[in-house]
Image (tube, rainbow, N blue to C red; front, side, top):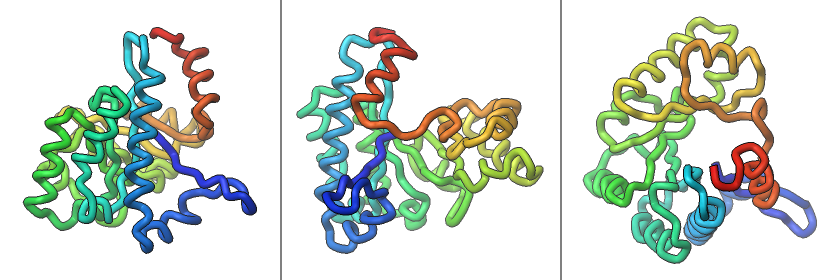
Length: 224
């Protein structure tokens, strides 16, 4: 997953919660979002050059981009400029974006899937959660919110909810990712439930691009 950070000249490295809301309010997120997709596509093309098994990269989309930008054209520009395969990219959407179904939104998502771009619903299981999204939209992935994952080892109710998501994903051919795994107990509980994918600090902290390339070269091999 591509993570955005702002290296401020005075205040140092800033997390998204310090500046994304301001970027959305001012409209700067439209430029930032397009730039981010281009950078991720470029990086994917660089990392996957010569690889037998390509790595896939996900990037978040802001809600305002769905109404104020042609996301399909933005993604097309990104892959055309980089030479990346669109199938290497997944766009992460929040549940809030999916609440109000419109013909334009459905058309946009279908066009992205025609490009073979993945569509993921992020932070699933809290807030606006509803399994109806799975039926209404051409999703390829569901990411289980870390608020659920954080209590999976202690809460039977949380395990039931997560288990239902995993089973639905398996039946519908969706990838299921557990977010925010930080302890071995959480990993073990999810493994017993046969959750196919997980991410979190237990596996590794965010790293910069060069460190990531060195890491995957060590773990997977340059042409794996």
